[in-house]
Image 1 (cartoon, rainbow, N blue to C red):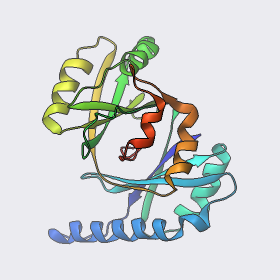
Image 2: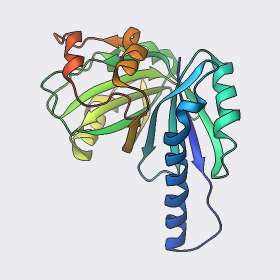
Image 3: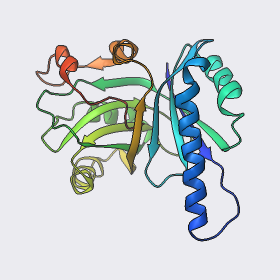
Image 4: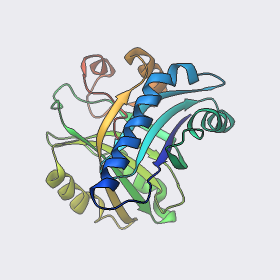
Length: 232
């Protein structure tokens, strides 16, 4: 199973630019510590596979490939919680995830965004399939889709590669917010990401979650240079 460990960064009482400076310093400390130690932390049914940061958010996200919920709990209590820069931890579990095989024609260097989707309960399956069937274009391509039910009214996480904010806003306004089953959407730009395992290992993790889009072939994943899951 895949889970996002959202680590809130601790801030001290200060004013002005000092808040931003301290936040950045603590964020960097956590980021570097994870990169430096994650291999030693792997074991007991859980390992870190990705590290990401959401723009303008006071948190770092660690994506775990875990055997079960107990493995996630043990990993967090032993390795994440003891860091003095950590102010809080939230877990988002991916349920029924689908990773979409990108086209060879997908432009490199596209930005990554996550769209949190709130759905009317009786439309959940319908909306999930609606998002899954979205056809990519030159401006926007799906990366992954999963149920999350994270307790904040965010039922589905839909990650996309996109040219920029204008293209994304048009997509959200015309394709998502017009659907009768969708209550609300929140978008987040992923400013930083780091894959923590070799590419071949990552492919093994998501192999059984991969789905083709249109006429795309699974082999095209071999030639795609962008890292998936860079928008958790």
